[in-house]
Structures are given as C-alpha cells and as structure tokens.
Length: 183
Image (cartoon, rainbow, N blue to C red; front, side):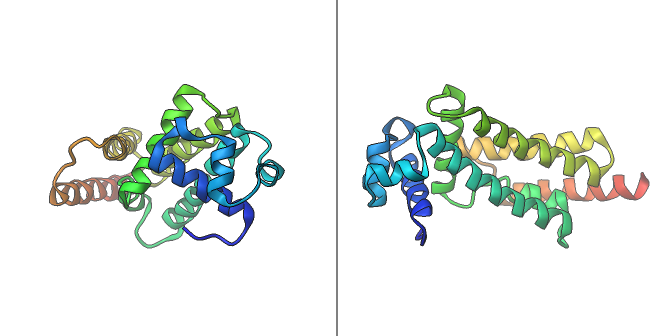
C-alpha cells in the first residue's frame, strides 16, 4: 500500500512488519526504519508502541465503519455484506488480522482503546444484524457463522469449498429475508 502522509507511511510499515514477521518484530526502531523516517519522526506521530498499534486499529476501524455504511445503505443488505466481508480478501489481510488479534490477546503493546475499537466492530455488526433480521436467534446464528468463517480463514484452517460458502450465504440471506417478511 502506498500512502502519501508520513503517518500513513508509518502505519503501512507497521502493517507490513506484522504481516511479514509478526507482532514480536514490532519495535519503534523497526517501524521507523521500514517507513523511512527517523525515530523522532515516528514518535512525533505515535509516542509509543501502544499508540502505534492503536493507530493501526483505528485505521481498520475506519474501514469497518465504511462497511457498516455500505451494509446499512446499500442494495445488498446487512446479512450479505457481513457474510461477504467475513472472509479475508487476501492472505496478507488474514495475516494482519491474526497479528492484531494475537497482540490484543497478549496485550503486548496494545492500549485499552484498541480493545474497545475491536469490540465496537463486532458489537456494531451484531446490532446491524439484529436490526435487519428481527429474529435475535437467527441474527446471532449469522454472526457466529461469519465470525467462524473469519477466524478459520485468519488461522489458516481448512476452508469450506467456495460453492458451499455461497450456498450457506444464500440460505442465511433467504432465512433472514423470510424472518423480516414474517416479522
């Protein structure tokens, strides 16, 4: 990813290190070197490793907000957008999210704000699903299926055949539509 601002270059460098080497390789020095800035330049934007990681989580949270808007306002509907975005689009994306989850789990260099931002993403999807579907059990089933697809993908576990995922998605969308019409 090529970004124009120093702040974005720093976050891009952090993301690359997380993907290529994992959370244990993240140091302020390594990120500064990868971003092509001095350590002082990095500290100007991110005064600590926790602030750096929070910046990346905030960036991902901003992307999630775009997905929420797309889900709520778009033609596809919340269930379809949620299930479509539950499978990472690339190996790099999966590795990035796995690294962030591992960092959150270990609390190594992560702030409370980072944890709140990640929880907000999951909570907001739950809320949108409940609002669209109307049936809380079906909404939770859809959320758990999406979360399961997501976590399986980022952990590198065997994935269902694409045709099975498509049929699963179609079935859940049909059930959500039926619940809305009958509710």
